[in-house]
Length: 276
Image (spheres, rainbow, N blue to C red):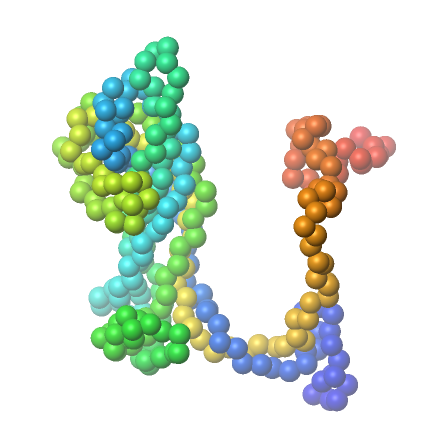
């Protein structure tokens, strides 16, 4: 590489780079995406919601959100480099509960649990890695395993609540026994009841991306340091000054027509062409 190429700074990828640098990064070894329709998930409630559910005549699903996902990574026997990822999803299900035909709904929240397993390739590593930011539990786990395992991650889009219904008895012979962590129980104010006469079941749509990543050293081309070009603006404590910087919400007064949403431009201000 000549001196001119070394000193040049390209404006876009693919040009002459300044130098090759080694970075420590998380490389994705394998990944998969999925669209699951979770039918007839039981909703668990705390004891203070028991009477309301027992007297309910109808329920409607209002909203669903993911509280957390527990992941467990284990090597697959006799399949070198592959790992099974056991995921346990905990959903906060918000329902409208109707007790009387003429009465208004009461908003009630409960928890639904869903288990999912996938198998992905994560390669193998026979080294032990120690870092100054590891806690005692992580160091003990590395000493026991004898090797550095890959890391599993899951990304979940906002779930879609599809339906909800009440059953006077459990669907099927029995419901699968599940344990709800104490941290989630504390969030809802107590333990959840499992032995009830009437149960609520919901159907939820979920989009997920599961990945297996490893910490590796990679050689990449470097173009330049990421130097911020924008200056920091000192904020004012005056609420009127902050309000003046907010743009006028035109869309709130003039909602966009069909086909205008998401066009990436101000469609209402576009001048009609001869083809329109």
